[in-house]
Length: 484
Image (cartoon, rainbow, N blue to C red; front, side):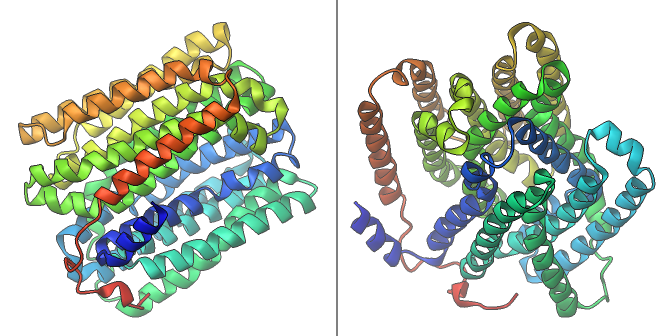
């Protein structure tokens, strides 16, 4: 099967090759924090792991407030509609994002002491957080353009380099620093920050300052209504950790943070697959070619289901490797967390229609509903049932959000744009696997490995059937392009 996959890859066009590389490299780069945890979690205490989890949560929240998330949403839509002007789009929006970031964190630093107390983070952590936010945003502006032009060689080279440097630096600095959490966050911050400076200066040199404000109005108009949605998404995904910190104890926070980190590998994969899938999906939606959209979506859903099951099956080994035996009590909630994260992936698929048609007025109310439901259920259940309750409240909330986004797509296109029959079958398989996992964990590990091999074989079979025919290169072979 491996030889067949290699041969199919070599015979495929640039779009297929780019999709494979975008998924693999994005997964590896975004998993840098996870892949270094077997070492770092033996350097940090359980309480420090919990503090790092809260730091990541606030990082996600403040990145939205301080950049308006202009490297997402509007950037993808504008490039889809005018690829010829992509350089100016990136330069204009990245400059506006930088200005917003400067104003926001200038205000934060004026009131840094009370903000530090509110966030329960040391002031130095907030300084590092600010630098991380800008660096990650500037790198993301560059990455989006590369994905939409299928320039996978440049994308892969930078992402792999950042992964290696971040991994080595974060472990080394966590071990060397007296404040081990500070060493961890600095190691993850500095490499993308340096890359961001180079990429942003390069972007300005290529376009100049003339017309730098061209896309500011469109960017603000499109993304400001989405900011409450983005914030609600973070609350939906991360409020569990904050509420466990306040309603339970630091040990429970550390256990849940590790369980969510492991389960979050599913979200990393889903994001990576969606990043590769989005350019094609946007084009098909604009052309109203829903038959082809449905065809392209089936393998995406299957990959998500197969990886979710694989992640559940390997959870005992995963938890032991990244944390050690003291973290094994969190094993029981991992299947529920993975299932919840799978339901969250439907937002990525359904929202493509809402974004392309610029019908996003329902996006925020749906996300707010899910976040509010999650917070209320956490407030009621965590004190009574412990930190494990947060996994079930997350699952319930994501199911509600997925259903609402599906109904929103029906309202926009007046038809099933996706293969809902196939999706329901896949859902049934995944839910069944989730229910069986507690029993599967108790059986001999060799039987689990046989199930893993069967799942991998099924995934490989789908990848073989999903190959694009050679000679259908929409971009004229621009995989050899070398521009920044």
